[in-house]
Length: 170
Image (cartoon, rainbow, N blue to C red; front, side, top):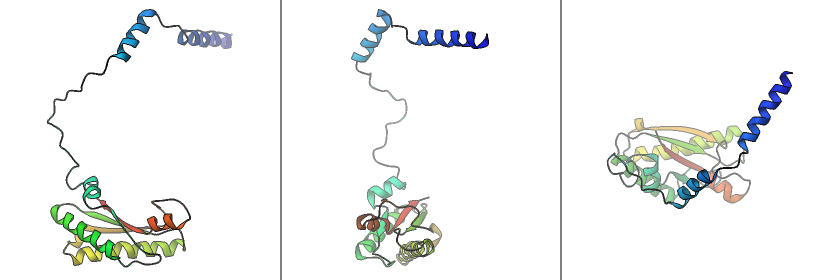
């Protein structure tokens, strides 16, 4: 008996959901669809162009957020040095900003080796920033080894993008 009552109730709900819309409903939706939306009005101050100064987005826009390394290496290449120099200048503009320097490796090698290599890469960037006058207390390092690839895949272009140190605003 309960099953019959439940079935009848479900059938009624199904029929109600399939009801044909009335002309009035159809006309109001068509008019709403044809009418362009009204411009949005705000009561707050005018939005500021660009990104919040000192934010991760600002860093990416003005400096970039990573440097790349050669296979099995942790020394900064010339283009990496210029990126870190630009990072130091950016950090000098925002003395309250702190960074985490992430070290990454490609998938070749053991997990332990790649964690150690990622740590050496992050420390290479940190050491250069300190040499450029950035306070060490503003910098932390972490190694992810091969665990967070920027580009998944087992080919040279992917590996090249994964051998990196990445800068993250805290």
